[in-house]
Length: 583
Image 1 (cartoon, rainbow, N blue to C red):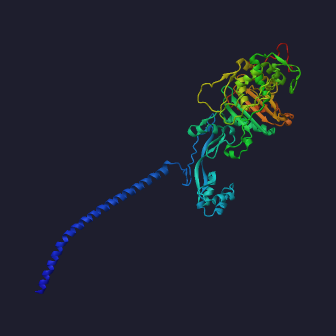
Image 2: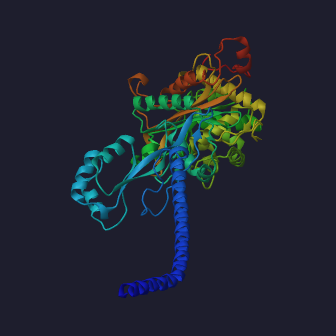
Image 3: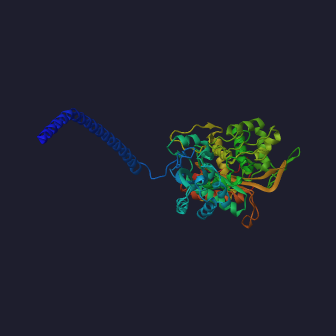
């Protein structure tokens, strides 16, 4: 009975417990559903974030692997304060030959704070880069800075050698470096850019903004083949005659385009920082010289064009001319009356001075002004010298200028002036930039076409029978004029310190090109019988240059004995009953 009672009470308690537990179970089920829902949302969100992250990484990997160039980043370390933008347009010659371009290179820098042993690092570095100084590298690596340059513009082999050292704290930065594939060729025309690719000299400086902003190559008028021939022949002559310098120019007489222009000594613009001031000096445009008897071309042209004398006329050159303390005399005096052709052929200073006297000082000034010789040459280079002109321009100046003394101009100004004398009388502005237009360039007339023909005849006479015989390049009908001038010093002149030159044109029956060769302080040798004058040392340069470049320029040789050629260029030497001494 007792058992039955207990059993009954136990059943009642279990009933009460089940009744009490029913609401709890319902609450627990709802809570579990909420937890599951929240967990599911979080998992979805995390999964979405992971998918986005992996997607971004994949896109970046594809961009790096397939779309970008295989180069190092422009800014290789966050401590670099500025990006190195080096984009610069190429420079090419008239035929598209590359003269200046950009090359990707690596530059070495360090974070000294991460260098464990500066002394050991410096010691190892100079084994890979021997040109570095160990003491200087040690000093840089011991600074408290986070960035120091160690070496700019490494070659791939140098970069590999440094990389192989495995020194912590060393880094490379990729950048573009300006390079000149032809080395010294046309260095004074091209100029160079600095380490940050800013134009410092030459065309690089004159067109710095244009080269930075444009992607199209800048096309010059020069022809690398012609430039090489001119530069090569000038160098040979400079060495042969032990000259301190040389310069030369080749110009198209019909448009003023410069096909070649060289100045020696020269330099390699790839290593412009190592060049001496004399190497960087452009003798063709920045140098100004008294150019001696080459100026007789202008004197004869003035006199003939102004009508003060005819080709059949002449002057008494028997005695020297004394003006105050000045004495004007001839180098090889004939001591007699000379016709205009003889004055030119024998290069008579006395005859030229009297011719200029007849022209007059004002007319002479006006003539040289129209030629552009009273102001710096207008050409696309920053290195341009100002001419030295007499102030005041006295009558004695008029006479000395007639044969190239008392007035100094650049070789480029001489070439431009002579081009106008032989091309029919038109002055063209000299240029180094190839024009895309096929229309003729603007020009102004300075002498008549008839006077130009007479000047060409005189220049041809000089090469055929006068002081310029050594310039005769067979088949190319060269004409020209020699020039020899003492260099001025301390208010006077230094004897045997000469500027020796020859300026020629070819072919004289229809001139296309003017060629100038000039040597600074040449020394005569056995082959020249000790002479260092223009006819002996400069005229042969022009002969060799013409022979080399004429075929490149499409000028074909002709028979120089052909009657039709003589009909154009011959001068009637027997005028007014006077016979020339050479006949």
